[in-house]
Image (cartoon, rainbow, N blue to C red):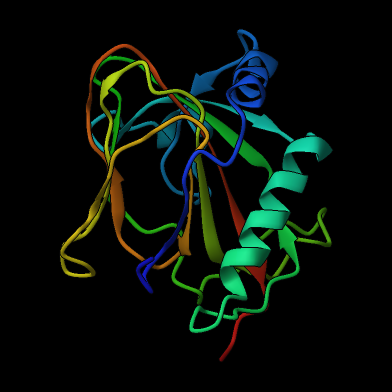
Length: 193
């Protein structure tokens, strides 16, 4: 594996992946960009991100995340970053044309403003987790910016997980056919100044 990311090929059973998709039902909402003070509908920008999301706090799925993030973070030569909690699980639905342009999930310097949530408040994103829930679509490749790594495209396959530092620039290329599903979350911890 690259020092940039760790990949677990087909580690989550297809049955569990389908269960995660089905758990969202028809409750998907249009995805937003950023977390500033604007209202949600003002943060929708389909030029930057065209997708739908459903939020989940299912403990069964957090067990998967916790195990795989812990394994990848603590491998010899990996990041060994401090983290203490995870944000809610975001189940993403990318229809034909769905995409998410170049972005980072966090820089490790910006703190989460959530005074009602003692686990997240004042913390920052450290590690990003992506689980592909299906593979019956075309396009929708996950790409790390070539400034970070030459072999930078990860072809989604069902049950495969990628974990990487949240400050690595990446994108989801446009879906050409079918609907792409994924589950993502972020490990958060103290800001190091």
